[in-house]
Length: 297
Image 1: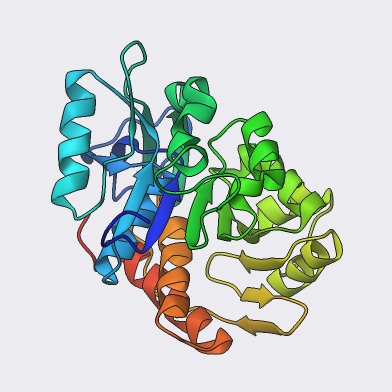
Image 2 (image 1 turned 120 degrees about the vertical axis):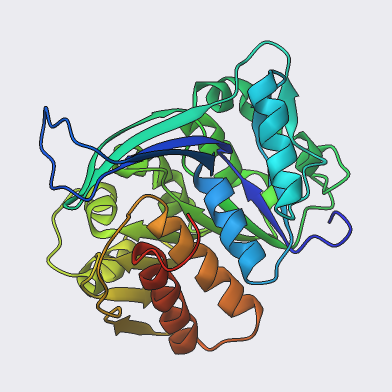
């Protein structure tokens, strides 16, 4: 492990361009609001929350060698992350994500993570060829992995000896990429963090609640599953226990990054020795605080 690092965050690190309005919106709406550009991406969102909980994440990702990439790497360092092992591409641009949110939630979003996909296994070299790990002496710490990687690469990770001893936590980048997590059901190697829609896509059926969905993921082969359902219930399920809780009721002012915040808060709680029940409670409170806008944008 890199000196002073507590966890590896593997996946998308990019610029989030988010337009937010206090108005209800529909297709074709043209309303006043605010547009922000901030470091984002699933792996980045998870890493930022881990930093807030006192952890030091190491990033494994692909970032272009363009000015936007230089600015992004500098931002990561300033936020307290280890950027030593980021793959800096000479011929690929820095990725971006664009979303529009209204008072009625997420209206539309486009994720341009093509550079991460094109870089492929190059981002994993420090885990396979050192210094973070080798196939014959694999990495043994925590890894947060996001589904923006290609299906082929995720399938490789699901069976690779380099990940055999890691505490692997996986989340899809979006419902549209949920099925990329199927290798981790097949090989039962990871803890999955999904919402109700994503659980349904993985199991090819609809679920009425998080507990039913979490149990179904276990039946399909998941090592452990955490399923959220917005302001409704959330469930953590393993062979040892199935626990369901309801999140705090808050006024929702933003949604992009809420799932990543939940995942990171849960990882941090368990890293600090919280029980199964307490870790879920802390994660739900962190996500509720985030969507209410009480933490900095």
